[in-house]
Image (cartoon, rainbow, N blue to C red; front, side):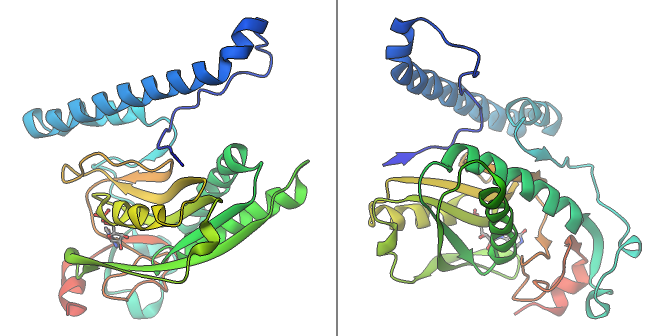
Amino acid sequence: MEYSAGTIDLSPQSDDLGSPCLNRHRPLLQVTVKKLALFIQTLVFYDMKKTVTKTGKTAALTYWVVINCKTILIKDEDSGYNKNLFCIPKHYEEDIERVFIPHGLILDRTERLARDIMQDMGSHHIVALCVLKGGYKFFADLLDHIKALNQNGDKSVPVTVDFVKIKSYCNDSPTEKISIVGEELSALNGKNVLVVEDIIETGRTMKALLSKLKDYEPKMIKVVSLLIKMTNRSPGYRPDYIGFEIPDKFVVGYALDYNEYFRDLNHICILKEKAKEKYKI
Ligand code: IMP
């Protein structure tokens, strides 16, 4: 089974034909170079984490920009947009502090993620696994884009879907126990699986899910997450594809919830503190 978490594109250029000897050894060479790049990326990440603890965030952010050229980085000081410039449902108007990522930007970024995923995985049947409930909007929009690529491209592959429901948060804090309520996932056996998640913070939830999925012996697993949080609580887990890298703030909307509320909000937003009190359980 292949577990890859690379965000660096090391694929050969189409005009790079190379020598016959090099071509024969190319697969081995590519795997080695990729592993080396991942190793260096991990080292840089841990170095960055030390920097966060020791000297504050500025140097760390520079590292993030350098190693994460394949994601949109939203920095700590980016506070989003005035909510009055957007349409917010009346029932949430008092609860929202700022619009953080507008819906249109989410869709545009998702379109590009779909293209990157199809370039990497588009030669075999894909099982797209939606992590409920927070992942359902991203999953639906991502699959629409993948369908469009299948419809209009020179080649196409079947995409089937499966669902798993995970609960690991209460109010705005992680719960001790992660509950995974899966359907029968034997359809994953021997397949190329794309796990579609809304947000990764420490990676604890995703690691628990990946360890469960291993039991079904898929051929390959790739993970796409719409958001990843920059937090020094994370030991460094990174998915294969990332939509946006965001500061350590609690966000809602576009199916991300606070105790089940705010899934019915199009934009990803920051909550007011008094809203956290209002919907607390
Ligand atoms: P992790 O296990 O620490 O990576 O946390 C990931 C899970 O926590 C996600 O699947 C979400 O359910 C939840 N979560 C983390 N941060 C947020 C947030 O800012 N808004 C909503 N849910 C969040």
